Image (tube, rainbow over all chains, first blue to last red):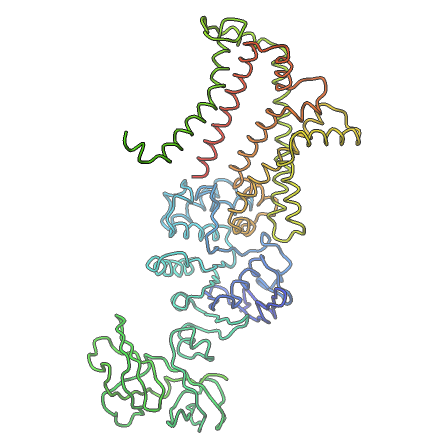
Length: 356
Length: 263
């Protein structure tokens, strides 16, 4: 399938600062794609270049196969939902949504029909005559979304649109956004620094760092198989174990780590015995037992700290080899209190080797 | 009563404000009162009241002509000052303009240059470039004087405008001109309105510049000045009262409008 959006070797620099570094990104139509990364990683610049508010220093952006870098924003069939919504304060909700349609020269009756239809999609049909200042944050968000969808763009761009909402409303809007995306079948490109938001909504997540793509893939893939330390750290929590590769067999690497031999999935890397390697380990992938298990690898340690977090409890376990691991356990488990001796281990495939 | 003495500074401030207010309003009140006096000389007691001076004023061809002339000049000044002022404000608010501070300082200069100096320099200027004294020269001088107020008001409003608004309009298919017309201008409306009222009032009020640059046709302030030289009369009081009422009404309406659109 032809990608709906294609960044080809796109660079963007502001003076000495490189915001986007040789970006090569193809986005399939009809997907919910999230650009995820910390502030300054180039995700917003990427979005602004696609919207037409910044132009690449070099490289080309293709929309449905046609180069668009030279086109002004009003000549591109993409629309943006801005972070602060940017609703026109002097126009009613209905006129805000109609703005793009009027500029397309659509007939008055057709505009009215389309605006009403869009408003009812988000249950705001009674609010057409209100002014933006009279709406709540969530309602403004919905109006901004409908205004951007009104001209029927091929691709909808969303620039951290949920960041101004409170936690509850944000979760509700995440579900709503996803369902609107599925209903309309349009390509959504969503920019955020919030990994939970990205995991909840996306078909594909593009993790960006320092203007480059760190890793791209489905949410579950990125979570379970992070390829770099950055991704393993940015999405969820990870323990990082640095050691030297001892041997590799059947996709499992044995790594010497502080006097112990531990195992991890090679995770697409090709480790060479003797080389240094880092493995990442999710706190919830670890098991924690009161006595040494039979036939399973385990390291001895002592519970240093126990934090109750509601849905789960996290332990900081100080190991005998001098390091400590973060372990997530069932909250109802009453054992493993501070000072207890415990045995900590994991299944070989639950740890992953990271690319150097 | 005791509290008055306990809080002396506050009492003193309050009292001095009221003294100031009386000082402000009393002359205007006297002038207005005299305009209703049925006698030719200005002195108390008033005795008989009359509207005849007003009847005389509104039938006074000179007065009506001068009023219309003043209003015409004020409108022309407002249009040109608003266009120039908005243009300068946009220029100064743009991100990458060389010499921004200089442009702004030059635009605001006429607000601080004394009117007399301004008038004399304009007089020398128009003679040098061969512009005759008269309507055009007056409008020129009034515009220069009014521009800074438009610039400052529009600039203040522009700075509070979210940058994304124009981007949103562009994104939805507007070219730069349409975006300016349909988003920027409506957003600036309260400031534009306030600035325009200010232009009208300063233009109608101006005497010094008009005096130096005017031709034979008198504006309202010049007419009143000429009449005062022939001695104060209740007719002048009536004229001044009309001007006072009209300008106050415009001022109050403008204040009301900007306050409403701000909320």
